[in-house]
Image (tube, rainbow, N blue to C red; front, side, top):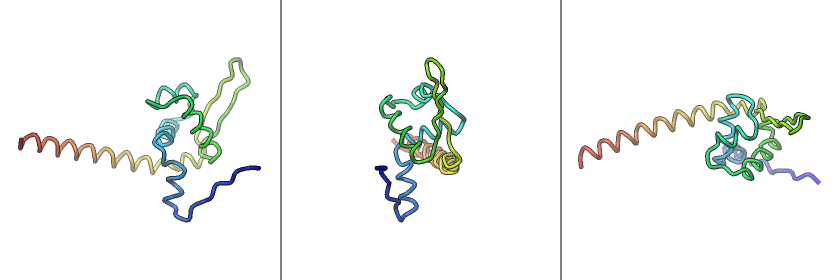
Length: 118
């Protein structure tokens, strides 16, 4: 029997359900630049464990955010690519990037002003 997720009424809650985990956002960030192999993702997503990456990739595949392609080679080569749905998250990540950049600049400015007063 296939497990069916309940779709929340609130669109923001739906988005958070799909990408609310910090690892998923970072995986999407890295896949926005193109197809990646598992080890490439392990290296680029700092601090993630192999078990957590595997779990998140499976969940994101089940949610339709990415595809997993296995090539019949020895050893097998596996690649991950964002789907159209996954790529549609780019504006959200772009907004997060802009907001984070502004926050960092504002925080640095406030820290600098605080140090001048001290």
